[in-house]
Image 1 (cartoon, rainbow, N blue to C red):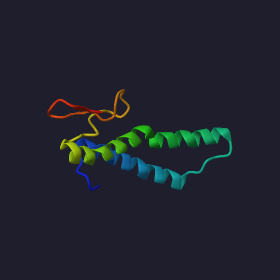
Image 2: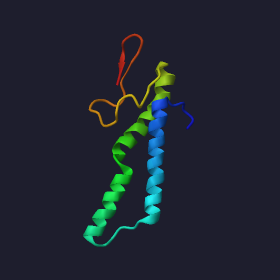
Image 3: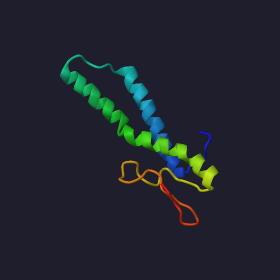
Image 4: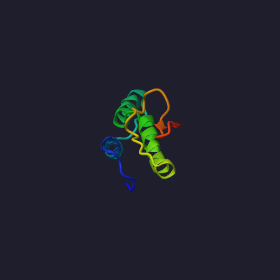
Length: 102
C-alpha cells in the first residue's frame, strides 16, 4: 500500500486481507448445495468467513480520503479511529482554525 497507515489502520487492513485469504480457501474447498439445508449450511459458513463485509468496504473507502485530506488541508486522518459500524459520519476532521470537514 503506497499510503502510510497508522498502526490501527494497518491492523484493520490486515484483517480485511485475512478475510480475503479465508474466503479464497473456503471457496476452494466448498461448493453450494442444491438442497435448502445444505445451502443454508454453506451460506452460513460463507457469512461467518466474511463477517460484516459492509464495514470492511466502508473502512477501505475511508482510506481513500487520507491522501486528499493531507494534500488539500495538510491534516492527518486515521480511518480506524471510528468503528465502521458506529452511527454518524465516516469522516470528520477539524482544521486548526476550527473549520469542520465532514
